Image (cartoon, rainbow, N blue to C red):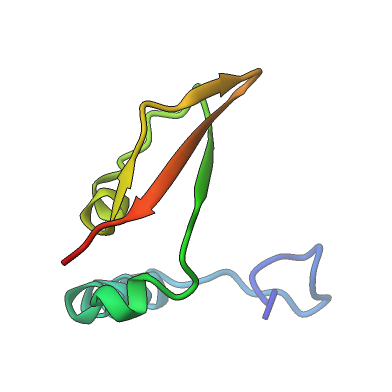
Length: 85
């Protein structure tokens, strides 16, 4: 853990493109098998994101309904409710 950052380890080595690709593939496989049971533990009630981020929330929207959001300074607060599948 932290081997890629000199701030976290005195023996830091950069991540390789192969390692990055492998983890991206593993995440893609995880997303394919993710189901409602997994997506609901822990169950979310709120989601907070910076309001200047153009975030893709389709993964969240697959499992949760969210309101229109409220702006609080630099952030948007969404109240979310688990979808019934």
